[in-house]
Length: 77
Image (tube, rainbow, N blue to C red; front, side, top):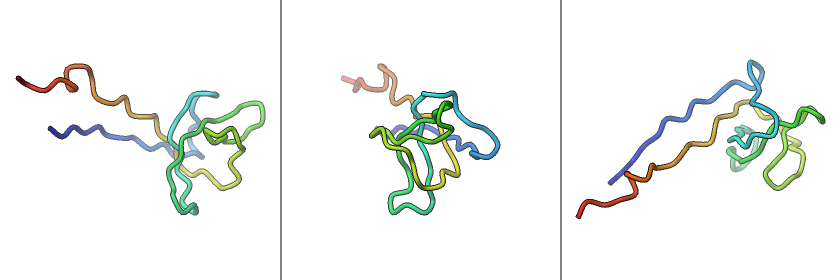
C-alpha cells in the first residue's frame, strides 16, 4: 500500500512559521536542500535541528507531514 501527503511550501519572505515549531526548511544552495529546523524570533534566525544557526539562505519552509494515521498502518487480514 502506498500513501501520499501533499507538502505545501511557504515562501520565507512572505510568511514565517510560529517560533520554535519544527518545520522543513528548503535551502537551494545546499547539497541536500531539505532540512529539519525552526525559526527563532529572539535571534531572528533559522536554527537547524542540531541547534546550530543556519548560515545559508532559507527560501521556503513547510509544515512537517503528519505521517500515516493509525488506520493506514494496519494491513487488511
